[in-house]
Length: 317
Image 1 (cartoon, rainbow, N blue to C red):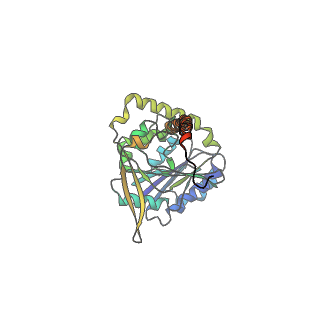
Image 2 (image 1 turned 90 degrees about the horizontal axis):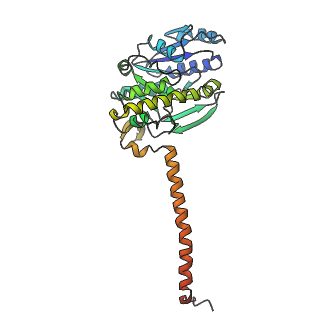
Image 3 (image 1 turned 135 degrees about the vertical axis):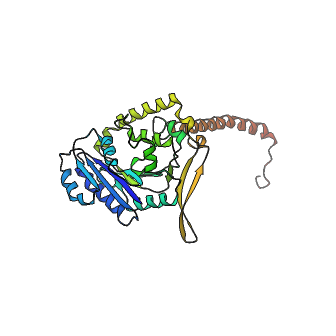
């Protein structure tokens, strides 16, 4: 099995070497052939020296002006032939087990067309640990309703943990849609959901690095996400999407470990938005408090009524 990874980069010399090394480390001994492509947008910050140092490990690379991140990614993928595909931005990181786990999943389950991690892992700008969040799963209908990224819920699918089969890529036109400048990955997942459910893997697969550039584009990213969600709502895109979500977990039985798939239905009940969940919780607490306040005078009245009939215990003289 060949795995094609594309890294787009522009003036990310501070993090690029760590990113490249993380990919190469994950490829060593993973049991699959790595086809690694790097597309640099003509950086002027010393990135070229880093690229030259690793050039022998790239299947193809370039350093030239392009039309932005997603144009670079499309250019990179057009040079690949691997059965499994994914991209890693030039500040993020793979783990040593990432590609071996991806290979094992796709070889074990032919029905799986694309996967993402349910353990969202983040690192700080210096590469130190930032945090990890557990996700229960991602459902297509909930995605189109904005419950996996958007004003209702900020739990996005983590881009650097997404891998897919080339057959799925070819069905959506073999390129990332051109509509968005910042949220094209969000648009791409929407196109994938039209064809197949995503399988959530209960394991961390990559680390997202928080840094100045990623923070500065957050508002523009959300603006494009909201526009996509509004269009999908108007066209009722989710009505053709199957219900439920799928997860892949590793189990240990009798000293042997194996991956198993679980399918869950009724995601409308499972995926209550955070805002609604908070409001329901507050309402129930308020109701309980009100009931308790109403109950206190009732209990006091009952005690007053029963006061003349009370009997002292024999030991109280």
